[in-house]
Structure formats: C-alpha cells, structure tokens
Image (tube, rainbow, N blue to C red; front, side, top):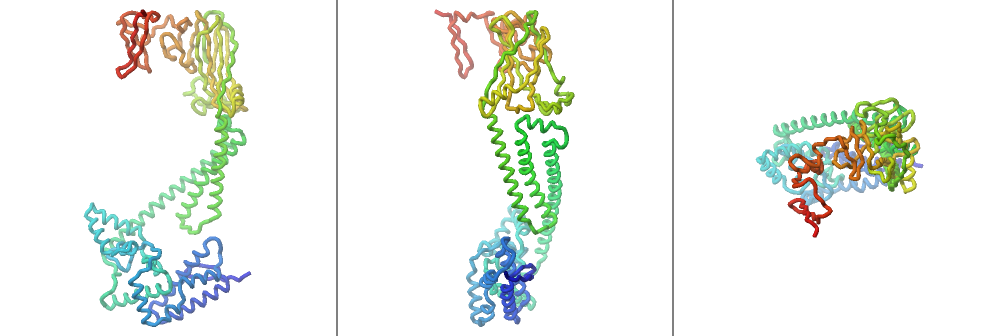
Amino acid sequence: MNKTVTVNIGGMVFHIEEQAYDQLRKYLEAIRGYFTTSDGRDEIIQDIESRIAEMFSERIGTSRQVVTSADVEYMINTMGKPEQVAGADEEKEQAEHRTWNSTESRGYRKLYRDPDDKVIGGVCSGLSHYVGMDPIWLRLIFAGAFFIWGSGLLLYILLLIIIPKAKTTSEKLEMKGQAVNIDNIKRTIEEEVEDIKNRISGKPGARRGGRSAVANFFEAIGAIIVAAIKFFVGFIGVIMAIVLIAVLFALFMVLLGMTGVIGDASLPIFLTHSFLDAWQMNMMTLALALVVGIPALVLLYRIVRSIFKITSESKIFNYTCGVLWGLGIIIATFIGFQIAREFRVSDTNRVTIPIAQPTSDTIHLAMLNPYDDKDDVYYNGDWKIMSDGWSINSSEDTARIEEVELDVQRADGDKYELVRITTSRGPNRKEAELNARGVIYELQQMDNVLKFSRDYILPKDVHFRAQKIRLILKVPVGKSVFLGENTEDIIYDIKNTTNTWDNDMVGHTWTMTNRGLECANCNFETNSSKSNDDEVKVRVNGEDVNIKVNSDTINWDNKDVKIKIDGEGIIIDAKDKK
C-alpha cells in the first residue's frame, strides 16, 4: 500500500504516489534552477507544467486514477532532462539550433493558425506548416480565388472560423510537427522573447505578429459569426431537449396504455389479438421502451451537457445505456422471429352451414351489423373502431375483423346451400387449421331472409393469423336471390350474364340460369349485350369497348376460332368448319 499526494499541475489536479511525487518535485526544481537566468523563465516553466499535465492525463486515462513512478519516468524521458538543455555550451546550442531550423521534425502535426507569421489571420501560414509548402503560394492561391465569385474570401473566412489559433507553446510546436519537450519549449519561448525585443527596438528581421486593421476586421467578423453560430446551435439544442422530453413522456404514456395501466383496454386488446400473447406483450413493451427510449435519453443527456457546458462524462451511464439498448434490440428481434414463425403456413377449413329452404323461390340477403356506419360512428356501445376493418369490445375482450366475402354460384341440386371457407396461417398446418376454426361468424335466418355479418369475431384465446372467411351461397337453377341494402359490403365479384358490377347488383332480384345469374327486370344500359346501332359493349378493365357486329349472335359451335394477339391488337378469326 503506497501513500498518495494530491497536486495541481498546469491547472489540473492529480493523485500521485509519494515516491513519484518526490521524483517530479526534484525534476521541476531542477528545471527552475537551470532556467533562472533564461528570458521568459516563468512562461517556460508554465508551458512545461502544462505539457506534463497533458502527458499524465493521457497516461492514466480512465483505467486508473493515480500517477505512478513509471509515468514520471516516461514523462522525463519524453520531455528530456534539464541538464541536456542548460548544460550545453553556446557553440553546441547554436549548432543544434541551426540543425533544428534546417530539418523539421516529421512527427504528428496538428492544424492551427500561426499568429506569429500572419497577414490577416494566420490561415495560410498555418496551412503551410501542415502541408509543408511556402505560405506565399497559398496566399497567391487565395488571392486568385478571390476573383472567382469571391470564393477565395469566403473560404478564407470559413477557415478563419474553423481552424483554431496556436496560442500556447505546445500548440505552436504541434503546428510545426516538432516534439513538445524542454529543448523545443525553451527555444521557442526564447525566440518569441527575442522577437518582441526586436520589434520594440525596431531591429530588422522581426516576425509579423502585430494586429493590422485588416486582421482586426476579419477576426471581428469571425467572432460575430462564431457567436451567432453558437447561439443558433444552443437554441436548436434547447428546442431538441424540449422535443426529446416530450418524446420520452409520450413514450411513457404509450407504454402505460399498452399495459392497460391508463386509458381503456382497447389498445392492449388490439395488440394481443393481433399477434402477441401476454408474455410477448410484456417483452415487446420492454423492447419498445429500450430501443426508442434509450437513444432519446442519451441524446437528451448530451444536449444538456452541451448547453450547461458540463465537461465530465459518466462512462457508467454510457456503458449501461449501450447494454440496455442492445438488449432491447435482441428482445425485439427474438419476438419478431416468433411472430413471423406464426405466419409461416396457410391452411383452410371448409364447412357447409345448414340453412332452412325458403318458402318461395327467392331468398333475400340482408346485413347483420354491430354498427350502422363505420365512417360516421366511432363508438357504438361497447364497440370501438380501432382502424379500418377492426373494432374492439373492451368489456368482452373480443375483436371484430372485416375480412368476409360473399359469392353466389350455381347449385348442383335443387336446394339452396351455404358454404363457409375459412383460411388462416400458423406455424404448421395443424395450428393454421385450429386458428381457422377458432373464429366466430354470426349468421341469422328469418323465414326467407338470410342475414350476414360484415365481420367475424376473434375470441380472446385466438390470435389474429390472417384469418379470412369466404361464403358461397349456391342457388339452384330457376330460383332467385335478392341482394338487399348494404350487401355490397361483403359481396365480391359475383359473376352474372350482364357483367354488372357488384354495387349495381344490390337492390335487384337475380335468377340463376344455366348461363349464370340474370336480372329479368333490370336495365343496365352500359352493360347491355346489344345497342341500337348493332354494337356489343364489353367492359375491359373498367372501360367500355364497342365491338361492331353484323348479327345479334354468333354460333361458335360450327366455327373454327383463331385468336391472334400482336402489336396491332387482338384479332379473332371465326370460319365455318369444313
């Protein structure tokens, strides 16, 4: 167990082992002693301490909190010992200085604006250090680009705003790609001090460092633009934070509604009847909370940190959110595969529904509805319309689904017959048939009137697996069927001799013949088999097509018929058989 000491280095607080602290203290004392007579002594020591603090921060990272002797040794080897700088004689120092000036270090470089060699803002000189070319060529390029719709000026202002200025000695060394050690820090600061003296005394050779009126103007513009951007970003951040809070609140209310804690039970009944059992419902609720809520929470956390300039960041919070979000994805994927498996196979259940034969030759079809008009009535007693074709009964915990079709066909015998064909899906054929059998369909008959429901009932213990009911009413030849009001809601593509649309068949009596259903007392002008000008009107894809004929009928039995389809259209050639 080692003792630790808390120290402040370069404005940063560190916990350092006692032995390592003694090494660091002796090292800094040696530096102060060697640089007692140096120009800019305080600035040199301050920059050295700032560099030491940066190195310690990089070394310890987030894995540990204490600076050890190994970290101090690493820092000393990187920065260099003070006697290697101050103990050299003048001739050797000048030789090293010339070598350093003639051959720059090829280490890692950072892009900064150079405040010591600038015409306006130091952009070109900073870029020249980064790309390794003379700044005068860059200045010529920007000057030439100025005449191309002013793009050079706009680009320069943009770079002036984006690229930071090299303020500290360490940043200036990084800008030039030189090692940040004692030697380079000392030499850089001494050169700056010497340059200031030359400018004050008016000696030639002083570097440009003064602030011209042009530089002040552009830097003021840049400061204004930066302030405007910061305000705009902050304003957008506040708006986004408010929106995210609203999203999280809405998500919370939805989750409570899905579980039935608040509101009516229509939504959870709708979801459970649709796809899920109780366990899957709970898991999907949890997955929704994690997959949607975690990203919104993390984004809100980062926006709040940015608005209030909170530099510290909780690693535990980030890791926890990442794990929870991944867990939500896994749960949602697992439940999704389970649901998809439930729709893998399709099967059919076919039953003949016994009906009483009407006392007359006509059976009347009517509707048996839980509500009058689904478009105008949202609530009808206990039934609530959730979406098109779905309605929920909260008290009975059942659902109604409008997936019913009615067709009228010719019967083989002399009695009316009604067949119900229910299709459904499931993980296998057996489960699919059980799902088909599980639905409930309401049907009523009173004398000659047969009433149908436009939807079927899905009981609580039966999940929706794409169940669909198809009803076939078989009418004997010579007998009729009357399509009552609103039956257009369930009839689908009923074949008839006049090719009349389903909606137009409603309100009329249709008699079954050997050719199909016929309406004796109907006058469908657009669908008549013959018009006054000897034209047969045929409807193709909803459009009327007129076909000119020379006689009312064609006896196809004695004809050889050939049909040719090409770019000119459809050609039908009917010739007498030989």
